[in-house]
Amino acid sequence: MKNMLKYIPYNSWEPEAIEMWLSEQAEKGLDLVDITLHFAKFRRAEPREVRYRFDQQELARLTPEEQEYFDACAKAGWELVCDWGNSHVFRTGDENAVELQSDPELYLRGLKKLRRRRMQNTCLLFVYLVLSIVTLFFGKDLGFFMILVEAGFTWMLFLWMIMLGAVVLIIDDIISLKKNKFPSKDRSTPTAVPKRAIFRAVVSTVAILSLVGLMVCNINLRNGSPFEDISLPLASLPFPTLADIAPDEAAGITYGNESRKNLPAPVQLIFRQAKHKYETNSSGLSVSIPVIAYWVCYDELWSAFLAKGLEKDWLKYETYGAALSSLSAPGFDDAFYGTDAEGEQLLIVRRGKAVLKVTYIGSADLREHLDIFAEKMG
Amino acid sequence: MSKKALETLTESMFYVLMALRHADLCGTEIAEAVEGKTGGRVRLGPGTLYTLLGSFGEKRLIEEIALDGRKRTYHITAKGIGAYEDELTRLRQCVADAEKEALP
Image (cartoon, rainbow over all chains, first blue to last red; front, side):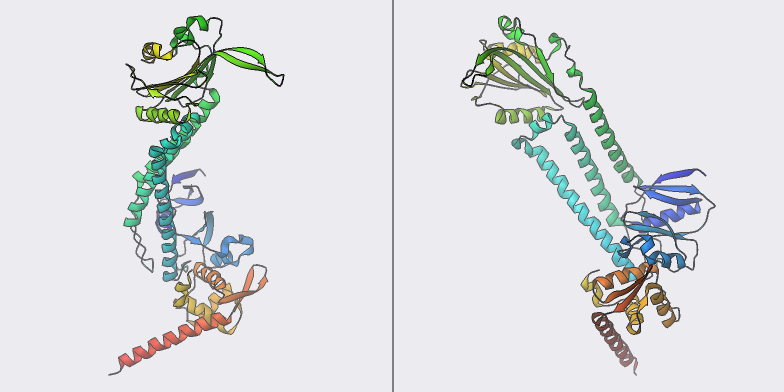
């Protein structure tokens, strides 16, 4: 007979609500077979009235073979259906069968303990959420944006997804803990637990999107980004090449193009052109020394806010000893320029969500070519 | 279960200790003894019984003295007897108070 999977519309810490829901399913002719993750597997059967119970046992950490608890349950008329987390799921069709938890006071104590533990978890989740937000918005002073970009933004998407999931779960917990009533001591009064189908649906959607997002990230990482294509026409680059800055120096240099793999939204392109000379050092080893080097790191992020964050990181961590000063450059939101002790030039410019860093060893002055940068980045 | 939770015994707790007061018994024998002693008024569900045996064991009110296949036999400790007698004293006091209250 064909089995059917159903999403359990309650939290795992609301066993009494799930018990009622399972009983309703039995009345519709669906008998529980197993529970995996948050999905209940049913098989078609004759509609009937049964009681389901979730029972958590410290002693039942032992296997069924070692434990007379399971014998006692069977003797009392309870059929063990499956295990779910720390709970054993039982059912009985015998209306005279003694309750598994026959002491209402102990039963309620257990239930309260379960919810208290859940509240602690919710509080921890809230702390995590706050820390994530603080890290995201204030972590830029710690090189956080640079790390994210270097990591290819995969983790950033993942972080956002987890944060969104955390928000939904916290709201869900607050609403359900507020509305959920404990069952009456003799369990004759059914617990009035509203089905929070919308919230559960949002939680599921976020979880699925997170997984899909991660899969897409991984597929992209495996396949490489469009910029990995080495044959990308030079003219289509969003920044000038050495030929645009110093045509004489560019002559004879075949360009090298490195790329980093990123999510579809942010673009990162690393471009390098260089000419080296070889000298023998004091140890007798041949070393390569750049005579001309033109190295560009171009990032197009999701927003100007993120681009500004990355720019700040670069200014703080990637100056290589060059003292940078601010430039007034038409066409850019920010521009910084400096040279190090060996005459290597460093230029960092940002326009909107695009930010670019150029390191250059050569005879031209990058400041005199800012208009070309502005034109290409436009 | 916290220590505080054990200070006042529930009815089930009280009867489990009472059953073990005079003999070492296994889980099902305890359930039968309690049901017999109360004329069927108190029926211990397996969930409650084994939760209690677990927590009593942790609190050293009882101890496991024999394992025969899946059958475990329990023995009440001096601490368990003390907890039972404290509760008995409290209940006697309650009854005495109620009887005094009932006098004209």
